[in-house]
View 1 (cartoon, rainbow, N blue to C red):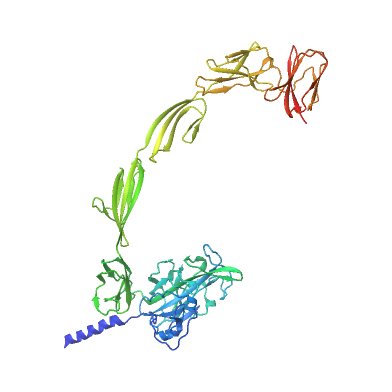
View 2 (tube, one colour):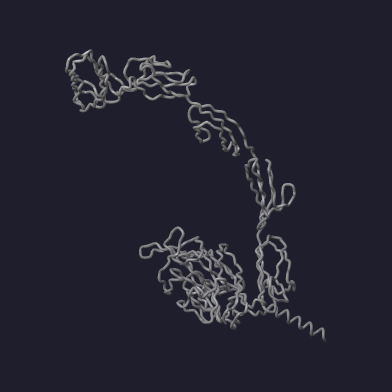
Length: 622
C-alpha cells in the first residue's frame, strides 16, 4: 500500500511539472482565450491581424494599436487583402502556440540616403523629447501580483525584429533596436504621461539584429518599487536609435517627398519570475547530425526535459545530450516554478575552398593565428604557426557548420644590397631623390619582388669653374687649364667670337667678355661673368660727346657731333642683326634714315671713334 502511494505521488508530480508555472504574467504565450467580437486592425496587412484586445484577455494596447496575430483564425473571419493585386507574404509564425503580438512602429524622414529621423517637431502626442516624428507601438497588462520591493527578478521574452512581409506599398523588412520592458506602479497607457526618465536602460534590448530570427531576451533586475504593471514598447530616445533600412516607403506630403521607415517587432513567450525560480537557458546553434548539450544555467529544480509539444520526459537531469537531424527543433525544460524553451538552430554542413597568394620578404614572417583551425597539411591541429620560407601550405577551419580549406601560395623574396659610384658635375637623380652635394648616401626602395632594397651611393659632384682674370688690360684668361673654351662678347648683345677657343683672349676691342668652359666628357660646363675691358661702363646709354635724338624714334635718328670727330655708326637689333651702318663720318650733324616698316622695339646704336666706342639703347615706336 505504501508503494502505491509513492507511485501516485510521482505521477501527480510529473503532471505538475508539465502543466504548471508560477509566471507572474498572465497569458504569456498570447494564446487565444476569448473571441467575443472581431475588430479588424485597419492596417490591411493580413487577414489574421486584429486589435490586441479583440481576441485575448489581460493584454491591452499601450499606444498606437498593437495587433494580435493567430495562425488558427477560421476562414469566416478572413479579410480580402489582395486589393489592386497588392498581395502579401505570410506573416511569421509564433515562437510557441498559435498567437503573437505584432508591433508596427515607424519614423519619418526626408533624407533619401541615410533616412535619418526628423527631430525636434511637435508630434501627435506632444512629446518632442522622445517621439519626435516617430510612431511607437506597445502593449501592457496588470500582473498577477505586485512585485516585492528590493527583490531580484528575471524577465524574458522572445523577440523577432523585422519581417519580410511586403504589401500594399509598404515594406516591413527594416530593422531597429531599443525595444524594451518598462515596469510601473500605475497605468501609463496615456502616452502623454510617458517620459524617457521612466525606464531603466538595463531592461532595453540595444542589439540591432537583422537576421529575422526569434531571439531570447533575458534581463535581470531589482524591483525598486512595488510594481503592478508590465509594459512593452520601443521605449527609446529616437536620437539614440540604431536602424537599418532595406525598403523605405515614400509619400508625397505637401509637395515634399517624405519617407516612412516601418520596423515591426514581434513578441511571444513572456516570462517574469523571481530570479531563483527562473530557469535560465541558452539557445543552441548546431550543425546537422551533431550531438549537442542542453543545460539549465540557473534556477532551482527538480527538472524535466521534453521535446517541445511532446509530453514524453527525456531526462530529469540538469543537462541533456541530444543528436539533431537537419531541421530546427525545440526542447522544453520544466521545474515546479517555471518552464523554458530551448531553441536548437540547425544549419547544414558546407565545405568551401579558397586560394590566397601572399608575398613576403626575408625580414618578414607570415603568422597564422586562428582559433577555428581544425587541421593542417601535416595532419596537426595547432592554431598558431609562423612561416619564414616560400612554400605552398593549406589548413582547414570550422565555423558555423562551414569547413573551409585555405590554400596559401607563400613567396618570400630577398632584399638586395648594392653600391653605386657616381662622378657628376650637376645634380644627380636616383629613385625619385635629387642629390646636389658630394657624399655617401643610403637609399631604400622596393624591388621587383616588393622587398626592401638598399643602395649605397658614393657621389662626387666635381664640377668645373669658369673664373676669368684680366692681364695688362688686354688679355682675358680663364683660370682653370686643360678645358674646352669658347669666348663670347657680352655687349651690346650676347654673341660668340669665332675661333676664340683658347684659354686666353687678347683683344683691343673696348667691350665686355665672357667665357664658357667644358670638361673633356662634355658633361660639366660653366659660364663666367661678363668682364669689361678698360673697365668701361658700356652697359646702357653711357655719357659721350655725341647727342642722339629723338629717343624713342620713328623713322629718323639725328646724331650731333659738336667736336667734329670722325666716327662710324652701326644699328643692330637684340639678336645682333645689323639694321644699318655707315662709313667714316666727319660732319657735325648726321641723319640716319630708316625703313618705315622697321619693327618697333629695342635697338643698339654703336658709335665708334678713334678713341672710344659707345653704345646707346634706342626705342623704335610707330
